Image (cartoon, rainbow, N blue to C red; front, side, top):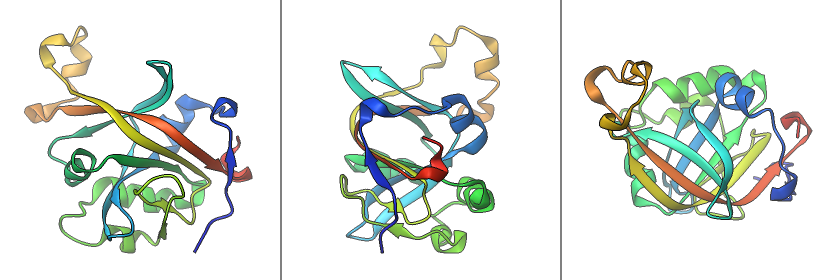
Length: 177
């Protein structure tokens, strides 16, 4: 099964990024679709930009999350955006662990193969950003310069920051791009 998204030039990608991350959320998927070994989780922290003269997506994953083993073990990931009608599915995928159940099936979303990477994309996605990992770093609380940051980490469950080179972006009119 395929979705109707069309490839857009990376240089032409334009989005209301603060709205995309903070209000719409994105679905991070890591692993290998063809082998059936992958996991997804909703993310609301991250960014898009240029680093090392490459277009990048940056995501953060707590080391305690089930998705962490997938982003750690596999070379690629996708970030998918969805129309607002999928908010309930994204909420489930952000709060329930894939360790305990098949949360993707429970969400009602349909994983499909990405043309660019091993990680899946989704039939229902209006935006899909396919990335290849190029760098990671674990947060070091001794580097926090603002007290508000530490307050995000009850239990000291810090994030790993992962940069991925954007290899492909596909979108449809629902993405607003």
